[in-house]
Amino acid sequence: MSSGHLVFDAVGKAYRARRTSVPAVVDFSLDIAAGELHVIVGPSGCGKSTLLGAVAGFTDITSGSIELDGEPLSVPGTQASIGPDRVVVFQDSTLFPWQTAAENVAYGLAARGLSRSATAAVAHDRLRSVGLEHIADRYPAELSSGVQRRVEILRALVMEPAVLLLDEPFRGMDAISRSAMHDALLQIYDKASATVLFITHDIEEAVYLGSRVTVMTTRPGSVKTTIGVPLDRPRDRSIVTASKFRQLVAEVSDAVRGEARTAFEAGEREMAR
Ligand SMILES: Nc1ncnc2c1ncn2[C@@H]1O[C@H](COP(=O)(O)OP(=O)(O)OP(=O)(O)O)[C@@H](O)[C@H]1O
Ligand SMILES: [Mg+2]
Image (cartoon, rainbow, N blue to C red; front, side):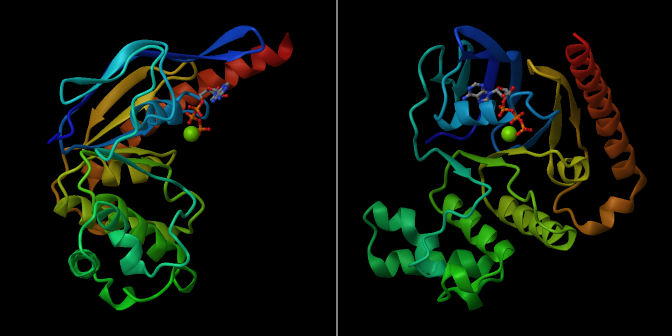
């Protein structure tokens, strides 16, 4: 049983584009502890989704390696196999519209061959643990997008994956739903034992959720800096006004701003050619 220790060692990825090779990620090294909630922020196009896709098994890498619990997951030229130890929650809902919330949560267990009553019991238990038992028999179309998202995260975690991968899962939500989602995710995370890799552009979100936050450089992306977030868990909204929180947000912002400026200037130079 894997525990979720994820190691990127000098990972590089170049995409082929019209006979040339475009580097997207260069020399990306990062060691994520089992059970850590690690957030990656960085300028658009720096390779965040590429890295997440390489862990999930959607894309290959061109140099370096990615290891999960000491086992190579991805080496150059070979995609990681897609496996139940790593699950992705996408930005768009992938719930089955013809299944109730409980059936959706239970989907993976049913696919594993558990009996109907056993899967229903687990699904109801998971929904109850986050105060959603009242929507167990509703269909996705009857649920708000925030509730759909929570059901989706529960569906992913019911399989007890070692790693949960989230690529800007709350983008496009209004501020109130988003903040409710943060608390819902943390509530789920605190009860689960998965390692979480969370990608976002939102710095407050990164600090509120993360155990550590890695800021990436402009493309080709590598690690610019990793900032620890020594704030106790369980966390709640009251920490966002605390000076320690504001200080961490400022620290991450400074790192991101520096990179954004570099990206902008590189773009300007490109335009001026
Ligand atoms: N299939 C592909 N073929 C060629 N180039 C690609 C492909 N996918 C991504 N790229 C390029 O690789 C770079 C990294 O892309 P990626 O999607 O990983 O960035 P990102 O950090 O997730 O960006 P964003 O913040 O906008 O989501 C970008 O320059 C992108 O244009
Ligand atoms: Mg992306």
